[in-house]
Image (cartoon, rainbow over all chains, first blue to last red; front, top):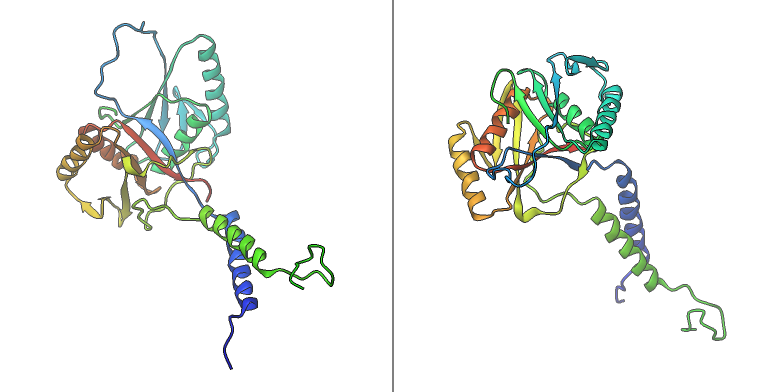
Length: 142
Length: 142
């Protein structure tokens, strides 16, 4: 007797695989990116009028405390940094109204964790602030 | 009999072939959503979480991942399957990449436990190589 191709078990298997992927979609971790720009080689063009940008210094301490112009915001363990983010958004709005630029300098202590720096970068991304520079300890920044 | 319910006489029959078609399309759809990236990813790195980071651009030709591992209290830089204890050869390699491709950018995939000073070091290496377009990798959720 010839062995025929069985369609029913194949559908069973396909169903199971499909269910697996459907369930996985909910919990899948996607890698995303926070963009940044290092000081480039191109000199700023001389034609455009240079406005004085607003410079903000964001401190990241070893304890996880985040400061904005030396004023501490949120608790050192809060990943979301709600007050910090809200303040940045207000600031961005205000400078946008004046047509000015905001430049943020992240001043992280040497042993501050990278995770905390990313939390700060995330808050800056929410506030749509793109001009970010870094200084760590007493070193020259990038 | 063979009408498939299309207005012939007799009972409409359950058609298995179109169903398999649909199932396979769904399967491919879910597989493509959950697909892993082809970027050189180091699984030993615990990425930080940034829920508001942007989606990754599909730009594999012009970018490379620079993995920074944190093992036994030491940072280890990995680039294109090679680890670098001394940064000078890495600067040379990155500079060569940048020279052959002007749009070249680097994605920093740092472990969340890294101290900020190590990320500073990596950024200075990238800057020395003349690359100004960088981004930091982060997960969308824990």
